[in-house]
Length: 242
Length: 76
Image (cartoon, rainbow over all chains, first blue to last red; front, side, top):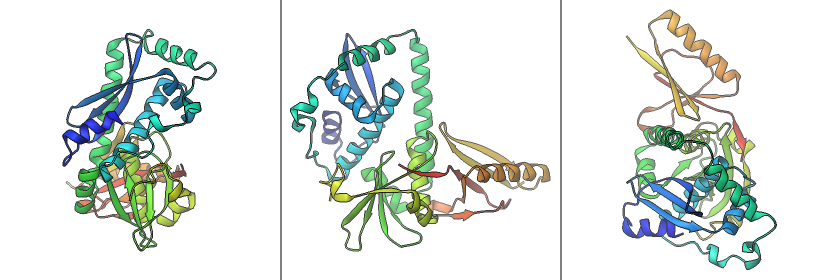
C-alpha cells in the first residue's frame, strides 16, 4: 500500500492516474515500481516469498504476465483507494503467516525471474518495449476518455472509475480501473449488489477494456450479462468500499 | 471529401483505418473490413458525439464517421 499511500497523501484532491507497476531487480533485490501520469514514481522492496505468493495466486510464471498481473492488481487497489480515500482493511501485514511462509521452490522461482531479467536482452530493448507499452496504454486511455460523457469523464478524472447505466435494464454499474472483476452492480437503493467480470477477447490495454465494458453495458447489456461471471459483492476483495 | 474512420481495438491500443466516404473503391474496402471483423465476432459501434453511447451497427454504413470495433466478449 506504500506504493499508493504516499501519492494519495501528496495529491489528495487530484491524484494522478496509475500508469503501470513493474518489477525491477537491483543489487539482488526485487522492487515494485509504480509509475503515475504526473511522472511520479514510487517503489517498495518485495520479498521473495511475497513475490512467489503473487506468482502462485495468479498462476503466472514469466515476467510479462507477472507485470500484467501486478498492474492489474495495482489498478484495482489504487482505484478503490482513490474512490474512498481509505487504506484497505486487508493489508499484506495482516495476511495469515502460513500464507507468507516460504514454500517449496519459491526461491528458485525468484532466482529464475532474476536471471530472466538480467539475461541477454539489451537495455535498449527493455526501454523500447517499455515505451511501446506506455504508448499503447496512453492510446487506450485517450480513446476511453474521448468516449466518456462529460459526467463520466469528470468522475473518472476524480476517482479512476465511472458509472454506466445499462441500456436494457436501466441498472447502474460502476466500472473501476482494472482489467477484470472491476464492474460493480448497484441495486435501486444504491447498495452494491454484485461484481461482474467480462472482458473483450485479446490482450487489450486498460483503456480499451474499460471502454468495451462501458459500450457493452450501454448498447448490448443482455449479451454482456450472458457471458459475465458474477460474485456477490460481499465476497469481493474490496468489500470495504461503500 | 468526407472521411470515415474504422477504429479496431488491439494490443497496441487501437489501429485506425481512414477512408474517403466519397470514393467507391475506398468504401468497398471499408465494407470488406467491416464484414471481416464482424464475421470474426467483433461488435461494431458507431461512436456518438461527446461520449454519448452511440449505436450498435450490424451493417456497414459509409455515412458513419467513426466506427469502433470491439472484440468478442468473454467471461473473466
